[in-house]
Each structure stands twice: as structure tokens, then as C-alpha cells.
Image 1 (cartoon, helix red, strand yellow):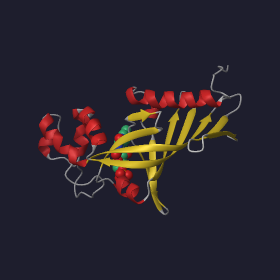
Image 2 (cartoon, protein in one colour):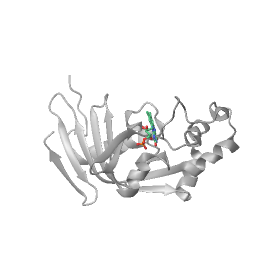
Image 3 (cartoon, helix red, strand yellow):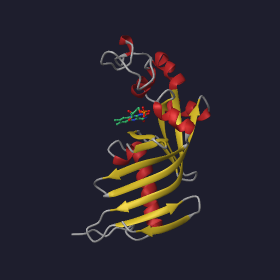
Image 4 (tube, helix red, strand yellow):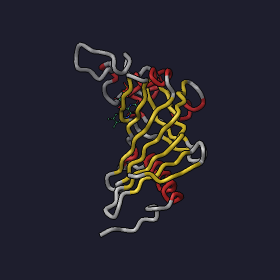
Amino acid sequence: MSIEVSYYENFQEIKKKIWLMLSDAITNRKSSFRIPVFICGEQSDFDGRIVVLRQTDKDNKIVQFHSDIRSDKIKKLKKNTNAAMLFYDKEEKIQVRLKVECIVNYSNEVTKESWSKTQHISRKCYLVDSSPGSESSTPTSGLKPELDNFEFTKEQSEDGYQNFTVVQCKIKSMEWLYLAAKGHRRAMFDLEKNKENWLVP
Ligand SMILES: Cc1cc2nc3c(=O)[nH]c(=O)nc-3n(C[C@H](O)[C@H](O)[C@H](O)COP(=O)(O)O)c2cc1C
């Protein structure tokens, strides 16, 4: 049995659906779109990792996530600001691929605002002494024992701000793939040229 969906063959409805899924992911912890793969790098050295989608701004075509300024991906982004994001919702049978250009925000109004909304549990990630990805001779969380629980104070958590960064991803293009029994559909949206076209799935 197939269920008719408004976005099957309609560019405007597809775009609407993509933005709906992206914005829902910000507050809906069960959304698959909440944890996309973020891919960046250079010619012979690029990789992907899961991040948490923290904000979407449809008017400015921006999605954003948080990270540690010392992490490998930030080093890569400093050399090449072009990156990609990959989303898949198994229930909806929808894959979205974004090509983006990144702005790494550090110690500015954007980070200040996001940090103020960052919860106690999430602030913990930014309290590790050594850079994420640095080698350790023992299995470790990277945290000092006194911080390795949730008993650290709000004041102590403020130390994490020095490592906190907000990566804003300006969307250049969105590619949509919808898997349907009656026939898959694939579309490309060029947000820079404001152009859209169908692709063979
Ligand atoms: C569910 C989940 C959510 C994650 N969210 C983030 C995130 O929002 N930001 C981030 O920098 N890393 C996040 N990570 C960790 C990254 O996937 C990655 O391991 C880490 O950032 C180091 O990557 P890098 O060395 O490429 O910088 C998350 C991992 C998982 C499994």
C-alpha cells in the first residue's frame, strides 16, 4: 500500500519538507535528522563524524552545531571551509545531502548566545584537559576525576567556554532522495543560483 505524499513530485513541497525535518530535529530528540554526519577535509585527508544539529535558520540558509575548538575537524575547516552534511530518516525514507560553507565562531556573540543555552550535561564535553583525539596511555574520558561526574558546579562548567565553538554551515545546495515503492525520486536544489532540477535516483 502506498501513501500519497504532497512532496512526491513537487519542488516547493520537497523544500518545505526538508526545512520541516531540519527544524524539528532541533527539539525532537527522536528525530534521525538530529544527528547528521558532518564531512570535511582536504584532498587526501577528509572524514566524517556525527554531530548534533543545534539550530536552523531557514531565512539565512544556515544550520549549526557545536564543537571543541581544539578538535581535528576545526583544524580541517580552517584549511578548507567547504564541507558536507548527510542525513537519513529511515521511517520517512528520506536522505538529504547538504553542501555547505562553514564559519567557525569563537568567543563572539554567536558562541555567547549558544553557550548560555548549553546545558550542564553538554558543557562537560568542553572540560577535557587535552584536545579531543589526543592519545592516552590509559582508557579515559579526558576529564579530571573531580569533573568526571555531574557534580561539577555551573561556575566550574564556565571553564568549558574557552574550548567552545559554534560551526555555522551556510547551505549552498541540498540534494533530496525519497525512496518509494512506486518509484524513487531525487531532486537537487542549488540555493546559490536558486535553481532546482530532478535527478535520476
Ligand atoms: C551521538 C553523537 C553526537 C555527537 N555530537 C557531536 C557534536 O555535536 N559536536 C562534536 O564536535 N562532536 C560530536 N560527537 C563526536 C564526534 O562524532 C567526533 O567523535 C568528535 O567530534 C571528534 O571528531 P574530530 O576528531 O573529527 O573533530 C558526537 C558523537 C556522537 C556519537
